[in-house]
Image (spheres, rainbow, N blue to C red):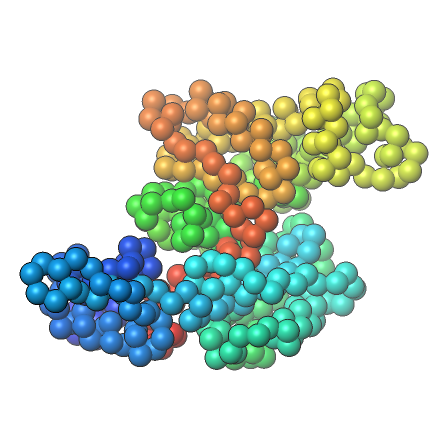
Length: 404
Ligand SMILES: [Zn+2]
């Protein structure tokens, strides 16, 4: 226990949080093991266990080994006792779903394309979700929202995301709380996805993460000591706007040669189009020049797999730049894991291998070779799980008043 918990209530709040997190992480577990782990009395643990049991958050799960007398009762989470509405605002689509305490996604729906303002599309989507779900609505404990940055987390406002036209200073958190009456947290997409890896992925609690969200744009999220590292004004983690080439292409942020202009989905598409216009022979040219169809990342990756020279060259270029950007990031931050999500990483996982090789060669510390490079643990569901994780973290940090 740290000194900052000075009064009894606050210590009890902290103990509740430690115990609930541990049951989640290590359960099934007995009261006596919890008491030993956190240096608490058996009766203090007993009181907290009773609170969680009465709130329906945990349940008995058989018996542990006896040390002479009656075998002790084991306790584990009731994973379906609490649900979070996860709302994902992406550059290409908006989706909503439910996520339980285990990170399992259900009832996912995607907003239909229309020209209504963003907030109205979001209201429609959540209303539709609430109409169709079968669970008892009292099990919903909050709305977690992930959205492209920049975001003002002090009042949960989407500012002016460069890759999402027409969005200007929307107070998402307040608007959703006013309408639905559940606690709502808005988080920058890459931060939320990074947190999902920490809560539900293959990451130990003490490991630091650099999350790379390589999609249309290129975002980053940092988890240090199990928390999102925000920096002043929530500005940390913006690896996509690290300048790699001062003579490089103009970025949506106003600078030149940012990593996003060299390694993201948009960058890969732009490079293919440039080379087609210059007359580079490629199987991607016909659709673009004669049918006006933009080459998609799916097309480009598919053509690369079939040996198209331009597609291969552009992807290699993007992965080399990504490796250089990661070498810089490792020199600054030296995380335990670098985890990749987003459409480009998913469609073209080879990019991770090359970027890893380059980053490890270029980073200064010999220990950089120990850094784990991995794909997101959640495939296409990482966004929903990420949006939900911001509420999960709050529930487990402050169970009182939220779920008990
Ligand atoms: Zn930029």
